[in-house]
Length: 573
Image (tube, rainbow, N blue to C red; front, side):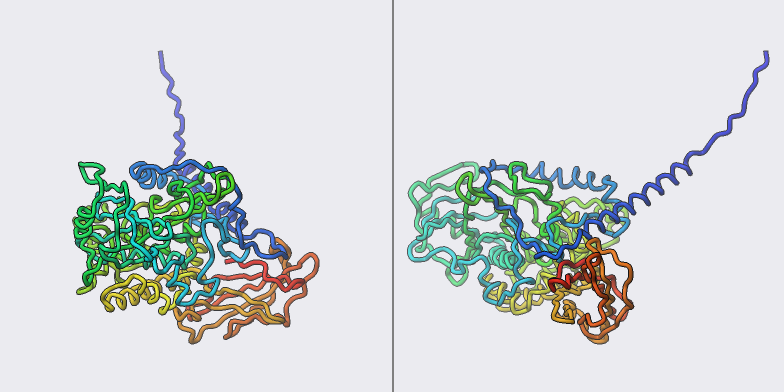
């Protein structure tokens, strides 16, 4: 019996699969970028610009919720990054624009963050003088001193002790001290950064450096303190004196502490940097999509606020039960400006707590490649100052200790918005806030002012190179004036800078039949004398602007005017 073997040609499917994957990726990229542009280009309306969110409506009191640090860290280091990595839309946007996030939904048509229970526009949009930034959220004097502060509780565990006090007004404050090994470092940085974040627009508690003596305190009835391995014990004047002396926060014979006022309302626990608070009907925007939380990557980089975990935030229910709403706060800024606990750590701000690429790089090079932070040193002779410099700082490479979902969604527009706010801080304003830290050595003040200014310049120049800083378009008759924030703030050289613009009548979807020719100029003005006429079908005037600083024309910033009302209705970047 003979056997017949038939030859069946073997088909190599690998090239077909690869080609299919490439086509799918290209389609995803186009769809991703297209959807981002569509979101950027919401229909134009000749109506007042929205500046306030309606997120303070009465709701029932939500339940207190605070996940443990371990489960939160596991989510932040493992599950959330994996979810982001395998999200096809994020990958497509990353390939198309260099940024994975979508357009932030809590911005108005001028691309500004809307005021809400999360954020209030302050510096950058509204004038703030030196006194405004130094006063912060108020009560500059700290706890009322018309009579002794009454201690109503204490903690002695952890790196530093603390006391809860009630002042003559009935306000409750937390007195926090420095680690004994670094007196003056964390309490001062905590106050300075608190003022910075308030000026930026966040809700923060009143934090102030206070100077006091033992005679300014009294132990309240029933006050107890917690001792390690012992538990609660009654507090007495004797053990109060002992605890105070152990803090080492003594300057010129007086105690220095950070007094943080308890927030008004009912505590609900911290807010997560991802998703929504399910029992808050007013919370309708995923937290990782809120521009102010994305901007924390830029704000945090300025002051090296690496400890941005959710536990350094606090939601408060404000108002009577059933008639109040949730207000969102950032708290505890002691681990900033290079300070941290008992010992400042060099790598904070340069690597995640678990940073596999950095760890792998050191392993593969057998330690031959030195990390940037290795060269970071504290300024000599300034014990109140932590590990903060300008030389080793790179704005685009800064990282928090625990990955932050909002920062992971940062877009170029988000980064530009945050940098624009930082660019509004003058040297005098920076100095005014640093002085509120009550540093004992004037050289420490000078060092921090110079360092913050240097880091500010690096941040602003980086983001203003990513997105042209042409902003604040102001119509006036037949002219529209705008501001080059790079030149106006002294961050970029104004010599030889050129601008150009072109005009078009567009419909509500920004569609036009024709653009004018480019008009070049040496000033930040747009002439409307030769503007194309608008009509009912093309009721808006588009003004596309670019800047050339000697390296070619930038990407465009386009402002839209409604000639019928004279109103600026939108800005696209």
